[in-house]
Length: 422
Image 1: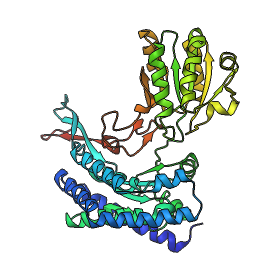
Image 2: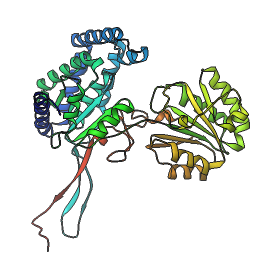
Image 3: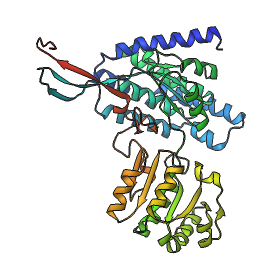
Image 4: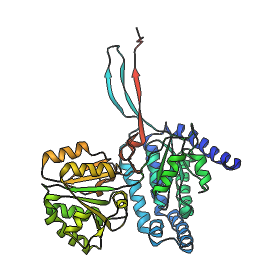
């Protein structure tokens, strides 16, 4: 049971944020954009230096605690990365505001003109780890889409996150909006997270962003809706009718460009009809990039240097230079493998066969299904959404990258002239 004082403090923050969300409903696009541009300007000046100083404290503490080099790299900010954060905010300013847009407006037989209006979700709780830039990204996306937010970052980035939050608070006050439109929890205690995700009526949506353990913890304990994305076990199927040179380029990009990303390739499926020719060639390419291949029996009969894949490999998100490889008998077998081991994230086929491509698009269940392209394209910016707050694999209420529009919902509106129902 949560400490009563802690529960009271977190509940008070949520009440203030809920009240701020109602004020934000009336904010104009120009007002919201001015807040974001104030943050951009602050990051370029002395307040940006304060963010870097706070980040240096976090990095030093993490190094002393023995965190891995990879985690420290995710945590670290420098002037170039801070400028990247500012560029991201400028991009959000340039995006159209979805709030208030009316869709499907039509006149009904009753005489009513009815349609649907885009509206904010309300209060979004964002729970995340490591990367302090998420504080700025999440706050900006929520603000532009008319949502107030409660942010709970990881303990390793506490000072960095506080510095970012302070900049947003000052910018909001300067534009006559409540500072509670962007609220950062003052503690990273897990007990505080449990309180936050149980606040029905105050929090409208929770978005956990981080490792599978964090997302499962939030999902299992939340009493409010959760956008889930457990992991990205992404597949690419090289069809019998594939352009093999194209397939080789796509496989290399999907696996090597950024192996730690959730949209990187984890399993390669190769049609038996082309495996004898394709596998040795692609194995040489990947070996040059130091990719470890783990094959099934049929793949290893062609490339004996592959390690033997275990049953666990087919369900593993490596986030590393490791790739599982299986030889399959046609499209049906590829579809069956993806259905058994996919994570609803990103799946791709390489083929010149239109019927096979269309069947793959229809039958594969994933937030992005691609034909003749790298899995690395499952990203808000790459899909034309601009910035994103994460990738949903839950289908409700969004499926895929969550940009500004996905941070809103639709309510029905109707215009009448005295109509009554008969």
